[in-house]
Length: 147
Image (cartoon, rainbow, N blue to C red):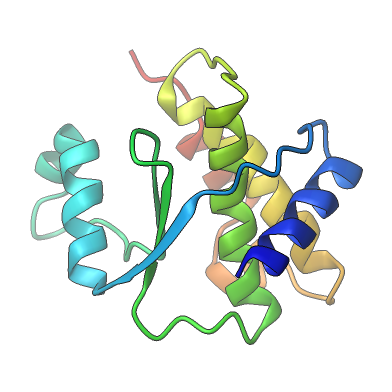
C-alpha cells in the first residue's frame, strides 16, 4: 500500500496545487455499514434531513482527520481506475489535513478532492459522471458552504 500511496502523492503533486507529503495515513478496511455510520456522525443534520424518502448516498470511503486514517470497504482491491480514484480522493483529504489547509467550511474541501479524482479518471477515458454519477453541478452542491 505504501508504494501505491507514494505514487498517488507524486501524481497529485504534479497534477494539482497540492504539495507532496509522504507522511501517509493509515488505511483500514471496514464494512460499508461502518463507513455509513461514520459519515452519519460526521454529518448528523444531513442524516436527519435525508429521511426514508431521500437516503444518504452509499458511502464509498471515509477519511478521519483525527486518526489520519482512510477507511475503505472490505474487499477493496484497487483493481480498476475507478476504485483507485476513490483512494486518490481520500488522499487529497489526507494531504489537506496534514498540510493544515483551511477552508471556508468542511464541505469546501470536497471540490479539490472531486476534481483530482475526475482528473485521475480522465487518464483512463473515464469521468466522475460515468463511474459515479457525479457531475459538475453535484460537485458544486457538495462543496458549497451552506449557512
